[in-house]
Picture 1: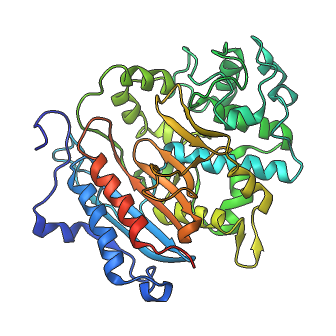
Picture 2: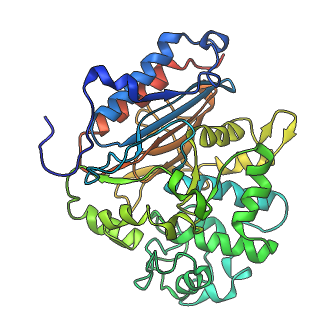
Length: 418
């Protein structure tokens, strides 16, 4: 039984849950056409509904592609109006077309942009950052490479003390200046420590100076427009109300987790979630953390990676760029920021056996998590590309078991490719 303290989402009685489920029937193919059954699809969706039942998620959206075709594209809950403390606020149902902020899953997209620029000879990932941003070399950071930033080994995992996320949301140059002035906590390449926010700004600035184009424009030119995707850093001001609103749910965050979050994001947990709904955050460019898209859009991006950069007859990304992003850089080394061992690629989080963040038996899977239970991933063994988008942000709550059960159902019900 969940204790009646903390922050929880109101969930209707069992008989009324079906009314909160929305789907795009025209998007879902006959499961038999890709070697699945309707029972497979409904079992997976039932586990997603169980996650919603945990009362930690105002909204859940899930999109799965198998063998390149959409087998599930559904959502349940409310985009706004059903978060803790929103009593009396008009409720807006979530739909598969509702965009979400994918937070750190943005790192996978930014990483592929950097690999693509390398493949196009626009920059070199093994170059020191100072080749592009000379002032970054302050305080003995001159040996930090772009690859160190991708691999969370640049020695600047936390944001500077003077970093005020909302006040500096649209002051890109000032954020870069602060990061250039920052003192590293370890030598380049020596320690693995997740760079939640910091690395993305430096990668984006290096890309701008190397190409003369802003990273948000590079994303549109290289990925979003060629694929016809609504996927970008932030949104235009007139679209703010369309984005699913995030909510801090569950019990208060205990120490030392609270301290890790504060140092990584520049804000305490509850304040960070509140800031993620602020127009200044939603309309800014944060390469490590504020891409906004739908579950279908994120799944489509990982289908592109699953197909090694090809979309039909068009080669959107260089095959070498996609392959290089999956090259293992860390095998279950302890991440000193997150406090757990993780298997990393070159900007991606990799699956493993027996434990994997993408479900059981998913060693070949690759993708990225986002704050807190946002997941975009591809699994070559199953010819699967998936995206799970959630708007609840719990740390301590009864949500991990239904999440694991959902990932397990996907791993078991989506057949391995022949």
